[in-house]
Length: 216
Image (cartoon, rainbow, N blue to C red):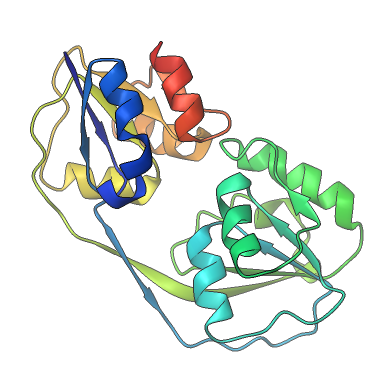
């Protein structure tokens, strides 16, 4: 039986743990991250808004309401679900959440010259916003990411879901020789490589369903 580590909270996987068990995979699920909202101010009017994560949705809506007729975009299906649960109609959903640059280009084509608000983490990688000219966007830090190191037993497969989780992992752990490494998209892949490790698989859609398919 293989042992797989994934940098997600176990509560986020409860409904899918049986899928791993069916493949004879033991799962160790742990996120090294905690998130805290921070006060923010929006300094300009915006015609479009882009959410890069469910956390961005949550922390933004705790302080603000989205004006009517705003074009609403998001990185992918998981973030879209957070918006739908709030009763918010979505105009754009990225088709390849694991490839932010591709999503950014798709979104830019959709909104044209509209001024865009990007509510995001204070440590955002800016993968989406960097595609736009600076005079077309406003970036607002609405939450911060806090890394909480923890020790993880040795596993045969490691699935990293974000650069911050990569940093959290390496604060107290190492990857055994011959272990497989799976990155939750290209941004995370790049960060893993910067740590001196090679990545075996990069998820394009960045979803549990895709992970199950690549595990065979």
